[in-house]
Amino acid sequence: MTDDRRAELAANLAGVQERIAAACAAAGRPREEVTLIVVTKTYPASDVRILHGLGVRHVAENRDQDAAPKAAACADLDIHWHFVGQLQTNKVRSVAGYADTVQSVDRLRLVTALSKAAVRAGREITCLVQVALDAESGQGERGGVAPDGVAELADAVAGSPGLRLGGLMTVAPLRGPYAGRQQAAFERLMESSSRLRADHPAANMVSAGMSADLEQAVAAGATHVRVGTAVLGVRPRLG
Ligand SMILES: *Cc1c(COP(=O)(O)O)cnc(C)c1O
Image (cartoon, rainbow, N blue to C red; front, side, top):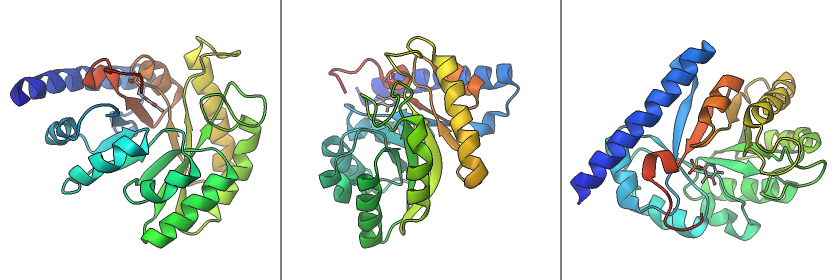
């Protein structure tokens, strides 16, 4: 059973690696510019262990209830854990215990809470500001801050003890002017990234692209792609 699962994950992973390599080649970008993050939400810690054995070092989760026990079960592995889900402040202390990067920073209250928790845990957490390209102002439906709110949040992260400003993240919008236009959405994110880097040159991470649209993300300039389904299979439940 485990051998079967290993073979399945190995084949899927190879397929995704090929897609990333092809997308980099098409964009004239070196392959090393793009980091694959495997999104293991809804799948067990045993899959994380198999993926680690296959060379995966970046893993993402979107719910603390699932992520905390999984990270604990894999504490012996050198894995960089990314938190990519909407994050409530009452979960921040738990998330700060295992997450190396939080990609879904979208409001000031969260920055304050993360900073406090990181300091308390004696850890440094890399933060990405999640940009909602479907929001005119305020927050997006699936989390994220409207583009005009990015600078304020980025400055707050950069000025907070225990936090390091890594860059930006987005999820291609299902509604609004960018619905069905992933490449345009990711190019818009890159504009925000350029603006951000003018003030924070080290904040050069751009996390965009999932199983269905990683090619468009790589073409636009993403440095990190977050792939779940294409590696692990269709999720047993919504996650
Ligand atoms: C689930 C998830 C992914 C991966 O999506 P797939 O379509 O399964 O590749 C990427 N990013 C976020 C924020 C997610 O929640």
